[in-house]
Image (cartoon, rainbow, N blue to C red; front, side, top):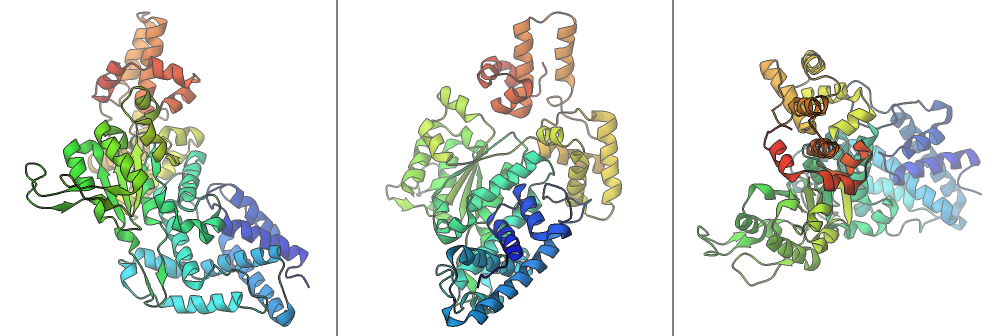
Length: 515
């Protein structure tokens, strides 16, 4: 007798797709539609935090349907007796159904471990109930469903999935498709594109893969790095009823552009007493302090000099390093995430960034979109972003009124076409300025002055065609920080953009000058 009737098999396959799929990709919608049939409710195609719209209305109905189907399948397995055996396809569907239903059943308990401090330091007694439920569903006369899916491991996987969804969903804002693609990229960085393969084998290996986050300044690269770092797999010890490490203390950020090469070495590698003036005692660096399941975040990695690039390359290749002034090798056990707003392709061509380091960094590549990209995709998205920022900055009480004030100021003083060269960071500062002073004025480097000067030169006929192209390419590149994005906007070849960007003019723009 088959485990699922034909109509139930459609639901089981859809639930399997949801259990193994990326919740931030549009394919999720089709799985929901197949699982719910006429009960499916059309919602926003992008799953994101939106204070103006309730959460996905299909989730609760899906949970009930999956739980009901699981109980039905379990009764059939019991009725089959010792001679019952599941074919491979049924076994996979049943295992995914168990994982989906139990994850949903314990989602609130997993969430409590995220929001309460020092989760790893406490006993997690709810594990006992989870283990009993798992035993009830998987240890059947038709056993042999998932020999690798032990209770402690699946409990750890469930906690990891809940953490990943929380940090991605809550910290990467925006209902546009560029924002949705970013959330999907981060999810894949954590779990790869195959969650089942990850759960079976890759969960032990992804710490060795370096992640590189690129994108313009102010687009949330550190938030992406935090989401990756705080969502790593942490084993659960059933003997002590504790997770082996605390995810909340596993992020070690270092802004490389703010430090001299010597200080970078000291902060990253550590030093021995006397290694340089002021080194009065031995000191462990981030690479040494970082635990096995921790993450070192190297912000502005494109800024480091070539000497440090060689040392960093050795860390990535050999997982070993030496303290400054020492000769003893020490082991690095964690994961490295780097971020840059520089175009590393052009930096390599100019000889400022090593190609071998770049190819070690980009095994897992995430690009953060600019705010302008999001607004071009969804022009009405700005209002939702402003409201979300207002709640974070000023709290929920009075958020509607303050959000309206910010929107009114933007509409009347900046206009819908304003480019937001400072991206989300600038939008947040706009909210703060309006809240405190009732106004926001972009700095000279981000104001419309540059555009006006370009327009004046065009109208009075004082610019050659080449000068016009150079100035315009430089102006757009100064805002995007990306050759690829500038080329997309101007519909030109990326190499043309690289050739036309005027370095001297670009420096003036970044220092606050105009065109």
